[in-house]
Amino acid sequence: MNSHGAFQTTPQHDSLYSRPFTESFEETPMLVAVLTNVGYVILIIFGYLRDLLRHWKIEQRHIAREKEEQKDFVPLYRDFQNFYTRNLYMRIRDNWNRPICSVPGAKMDLMDRTSHDYNWTFEYNGRTMKDVINLGSYNYLGFAENTGPCADSAAQVVRTYGIGVASTRQEIGNLDKHEEMEKQVAKFLGVESAMAFGMGFATNSMNIPALVGKGCLILSDELNHTSLVLGARLSGATIRVFKHNNMQCLEKLLSEAIIYGQPRTHRPWKKILIVVEGIYSMEGSIVRLPEVITLKKRYKAYLYLDEAHSIGALGHRGRGVVDYFDLDPRDVDVLMGTFTKSFGAAGGYIAGKRELIEYLRSHSHSAVYAASMSPPVVEQIITSMKCIMGDDGTSIGCKRLQQLAENTTYFRRRLREMGFIIYGNDDSPVIPMMLYMPAKIGAFGREMLKKNIGVVVVGFPATSLVESRARFCISAAHSKEILDTALSAISEVGDVLQLKYSRRLTQNAPSAHLFAENMFEDIDD
Figure (cartoon, one colour):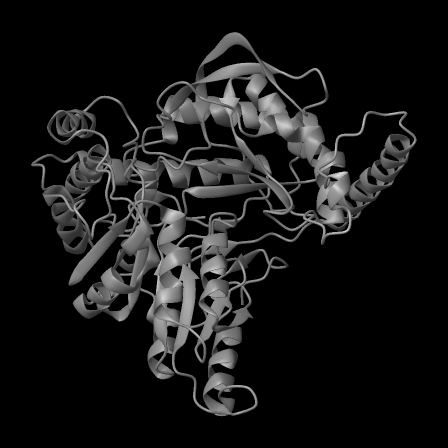
């Protein structure tokens, strides 16, 4: 059972797994949990005091509010949402939305900015922070670059096709490049057919309503992405949520759905759709896909798999979580993924049986009404995918897959040895490091930037109120030297902010020469 109260989790049915599957969710130390809650209580108390000062016009009133003439209408803004934004979020707002002015590779350039009103507004001071180590972008395979075969091919396509298409696919915006890309995606995934969309978020939110509706049941993991949640709500289907990666809970909901059917009428559900992700982007965990497929077959349900973060980043061939577990892609009814991460492009895809794709071409709002994908973006997808497959005649893709796996294993192991609490699967390139206390969210981001390292810090509402974290995204573009520089800085800041909460028995960190070509095979946490 996957629980944040356990140190490590392993599968219930080991026979379904062809490789070790270990995830860790170390329990929050009691003192840290108490201090975190006390910290939020203090912030809320001071927030109400500041609101009182604003009411008396002692402090300037910054608040999203309706116009006076609209006071009798239903309010547009929720009170607590306003309260949280102006009294908690604004204190640390400088950690987000920082503009970059370079390729988001292993290093990047940031535009410096200052605020004279406590982060309500920012001014650019004309300075640029050069060569900031990038630990935040989803550039898993390093294809977000402005040199190399992908960039050269995209530039050539611009000269031939231009930038935009100015039409939908169903009118006069269907290029031969779009057809080539979709055939390439289907070949890459090992399925009959695929179709692409210009926006990853809309791929979920606009296609799920086309697949299920009233009288259908969606079983959704509690940590599914907002795009999946929105798509499920827009569909009109009944939604039931199961605990994260908890197969006992999922099976219980499936059996109850079969036994009792729909509420009141007890008629059988028209469809039962299980919705999961490959890698969960806030937890760093990997779906227990072999067990999900077993349950899906047993109860005759359908499976929708979102591989936004896992496609290209998992599996010895980079085919995602299906490849990672050596499973048959035909066992997944709807394969979804995005091109925005491992492929360094934009958009998303749906893949599966030919009948499914043909149905979506005429019934999906995202397919019917959205503008066609930009030709250079399409070419970036085609070229990067060929690199991963080796169809370009080089071993670039294979080497990047291996480098990503090695970097992930090394970075996770070193963080654990330092004493940080790290969430997720050992093979996940998404690495959450727990911060917990609200004051440490902003402090960690600022202190790391002082050391020329850009990190993503995450708090409520993206996580639960007391589980704030920093989220590192590892890339094949990161060298050993870059990772060691980042790890050294993280350790120093962790000591200053007292972030090394882990109660694991740790060994001394190994010397640098232990990082070798075969590290991915040698290290076993």
